[in-house]
Image 1 (cartoon, rainbow, N blue to C red):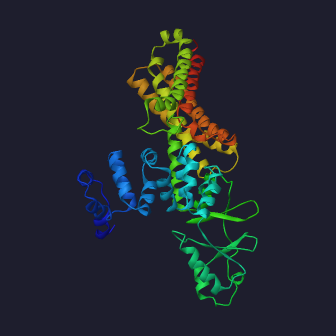
Image 2 (cartoon, one colour; image 1 turned 60 degrees about the vertical axis):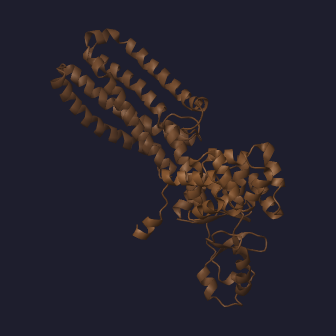
Image 3 (cartoon, rainbow, N blue to C red; image 1 turned 30 degrees about the vertical axis):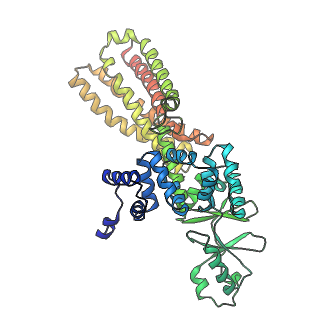
Length: 457
């Protein structure tokens, strides 16, 4: 990073917040505008997230709609909801008029159903209104719910000269031109246009003679994860969206896909941690409890299951008290191995890199578990025999149990996510308490069964 770039990098400080609050308190509108003009709309949103709602509303109403519409999109979701609640339907419509259709539809979708139609009715631009209504009809987790209607398209029958004139008009409505899409007279996507080819072509040439027929696209009903995979695979900044008849409907840009990837990662992280709903630290105690309690209950019943197994071998533990010392080791090792295996598989499933047959994958995990199990078992065997002074037979029991438990945990950690994925269930759910709890129970059961077989109690 250059020194010049570092100098202009935004830093939210206590002093800056206090300065903004002071200007608001003094109603120094001109000074406040001059100060905020120095910052990007994302930086202003960060400032508004840190001040009181009343102060944030003062800034929102002070600045022009062209600026505040962009600020709204960058606000924290909870703060945006509060701001929208304090704006009239007409004021929200004025903000929406400045936004691209995809962002506008997102804002309206966040409103209560009773207010959505009120806001839409206040939108003056009839074409903008119709396009927003079209996007609202799609599921938010599909390409249609993510796409924007703004794009640059040309017909294959146009000449280069006519195409350039029309592109200039269309480009005024598009924030950033990533691609120029070519359609036929029926509106079907047939290719894309290279700006270089367009510039060097003769004015009288037809677009049909110079466009590139190879173009990646997604169906309007495709899941957003599919869209993300396609764009990541082909390093696309934007991708066109078509219907079942290949009619061009819109486009999805990389900034929207980055948001999708971030949201999916957060959701998977929460599932892996045993949180069943999308929650944030600032949510109410009731919301956080609903998200966490189900998996905590599963963990509790898992613990009770393990306790029940142990209670069935109390006689053995009275005779071989050393076995009790290594129960935490067996449980922790089984849980760690299971989570490691499932995390790798879940990541592979998310990246679409898990290939081949399930049996081959399980054999690989079996081999890996065997190698790791033998290495750990040898260390534990030496420590238990010479450190804890356990008998040779008991040390062998612990070592063999560890090898078996590690292999078992690796297989479960691999098998469960793949099966869940095949059944249409998010495999991330397998990486947390589910794997840990199941491996704890099976680990303890295997431990005592092996001890019974070797020690003969």
